Length: 281
Image (cartoon, rainbow, N blue to C red):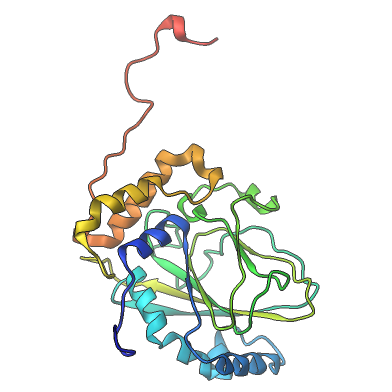
């Protein structure tokens, strides 16, 4: 068993899970009393401190300097990553209505490469910290698994209601939800009598990886390739399976460096022209 101060990186399967679904949950690793004190400090704030949240609640830095978080961010973003100055404390009051489905804004100066989305890479991740238990009626965050892979996802997603394959993040106090920056998500309605706090952070890749920054086992390559091609994320994406698989593979290869997998994309529409008697008019 690893010691408490050792950095146990994510496994190949955990990386595939993130590529496929677009999120990873970090279970609580600090005493519940710690999170209760954070909650009390947030309740005492007269205004939202925005990017200055560390200055008014300095104990929050203990979360992101912990190996439980570092192991995940290192595995996803490489051995060198940075924490953006942008932060936001969401205060979800009882009676708050559901948000529309959305991807987070690109109008943040810290984002890399001209504020683009990267459905074939992991350039940035959102990390959402919840200092209290989040029950199903407290406005939990909802996600559409796999939606980070489709750069051209139509804005009409925003006006839809429940998706069959959506995930509702009901979590224990102290949990962190790590998201690919481009995933479609929404805060749901708070019908409880409790305030739900969530503090959002942004972490970014600084350098391209020359080799996997996670615990990679090359002997598992064939099985990993099969998972990237076959694992389901959301049934609504089945009509886009060739594109989905292509983007999954590119994402793996972009972060794996010299451990890239061989993958050939086949254009099913290429080939001989249809014969005239088979053309529908």
